[in-house]
Image (cartoon, rainbow, N blue to C red):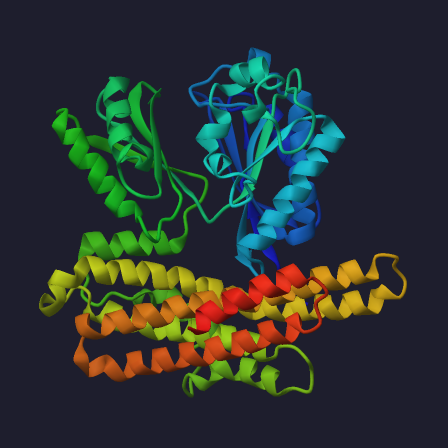
Length: 491
């Protein structure tokens, strides 16, 4: 059975009493869920717990953590530097392996409904799970914090929760649940206690006030020093080294310097590799130059002695096996991922060269976007197979269920949405690869031609899978809208 690893990073409004945090962590320890990290900060009076686990148990772990926090944390007595609205303040789900962001959205909604039902705590959905655009940003939901929300939740329609009654829990407040990409919580300490300087720098760096895209920021006084506290919501497009350099430059305007930085929770290895490439200025840097990465690839068979065949052969043999999955949809996603990978290789080998220095920003943006598309297409390989299995399960169960047709339609819609998403992504890959032709090494135009050809094949295969599922669907409006989207992609 395919792995479905999900990360969950609940933030609780307690950073001083270790016994309370221990009890919350213990409540979340269930089979299939693993504790990766725990951070407590007494100044912020907040803790951040990092869990990873299979899709089903990690949802229950999060729910139990909220219940234990509601028992032990009283927001009417809580004080700390960090904004908060709930004992369990925010619970994000992040796709890791075998799941998509859309899967995490569905998980968020289930968890939110359960929290409201079990503990009478109102729940708001944010980021990718948000029901309205205004609630995508956590700051909008949490504005006024616990006290402000408590005062007007019953009378202000904008404060109506997504789940539960329009009243806060008397001591546990309200909780925010959502789905998002990996977030890096990154703080920079300055050599001054003047928190106003940190606030000015935070205003300059955060996107909402004209700063860097995918950066949120605030200024606090922590351990006697001014701290620029930031969340990096897409480190591939706005890397951590760029954020540090921006903060350092802004700090110099006020005659101060960074003295240290802090990661709260965990950070992806790729983010550190990007920083190493930037600060060391290694020519033609690639993650495979790192000893541990190369060793891991060899040990896992991805670069086995005897050539690259060992890495790709298992998937090819799975396609050849007399089983329905993986099939054409998975193959289309794999072709799209290979197209994105080839285009990335070409852009990476031109970036940093003197001949192409004028295209540095375009190449960096292409590499960042292709990395995201590549990961999404890789996830779709398994997701497509899983969706087909869900359709077969729905047909099998239909005879025993009064809502058989509804279950079949729901499964078919999911099985249609995944290849449609693949089609949308490979069209973008095709466009990026085409745009790279005039700004990259002409000796590599055959690689880009191959990338475009793979993307075209992926598009044809994905749309074929969309159409075959639409033929069985009994929802005219959905069918019409989806065919219109597919036709636009073909055009």
